[in-house]
Image (cartoon, rainbow, N blue to C red):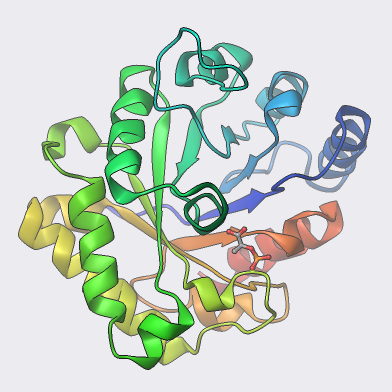
Length: 254
Ligand code: PEP
C-alpha cells in the first residue's frame, strides 16, 4: 500500500486563539476542502477551537506533547485523554526541543507513546542527532538508540498509526536544511531499523517525515526522495500562505 504524503505544521509556542482562527480562515479560503495531506500541531489552548474548524476541511490536528501520566496531581500537565477530548487526532512525542529544554529521555518517550495509543492519538516519534553527534560519526547510533528505547516493548500491531519524524537537531530552526544525501541515507537507515525490529511490511507501511528548516523553496527536492513521506515544518508553517504553498508544491511533485 502506498504511503500517503503528509505535511505537518508545528506552531510550537506561537499563536493565540484569535490568531489561530485567522490562520484557519485563510487556509479555508485558499484550500477549501482540499487539505488532504496537511495537518497541524497547535498549542494546547488552541486544540479545541482549531479542531472544530479543521474537521470541516478534513485536516487532522495534533498536540505537541502529552503528559506521561494519565491523570492526578501533576500541576500544569495535559494528558493524552484531554488532548483527544479537545479534538486532537495525533501528538508529537520527543520533539528535540522537549528533549533539550525539558530533559525528556527516550525512556519517557516510550511511556508517552503508550499513553497516546491508549487514548487513540497517533504518535509521531521525533528522533534526531545533534551536530556534535554528526561530527563524531554518531548519528546512526543515536537514532538507533532513540528508536529502540522509544519503541521498547511494543508490538507492530499496537503501532499501526505510528509516524517517525527524522529531525536532525542542527537543522531545526537554523535555516540549515540537511542535504538530500543525508536525508536519504538517514530515512533509509530508519526504515531498515523498523524492518529489523518489527517486519518488512511494517517498515514499508510506516511514514517517515523529514524536519529541519523545510520551506516552500526547498521542499520539492526533499519530498522527491524515495524514503521521505512528508515533512514536519516549524517556522514555515506559521504563515498560512506558506503552508498552502508547501502543500501545493508537494501535490505537484509526487
Ligand atoms: C520543528 O519544529 O520540528 C522544525 C522542524 O522546525 P523548523 O522547520 O523551523 O526547522
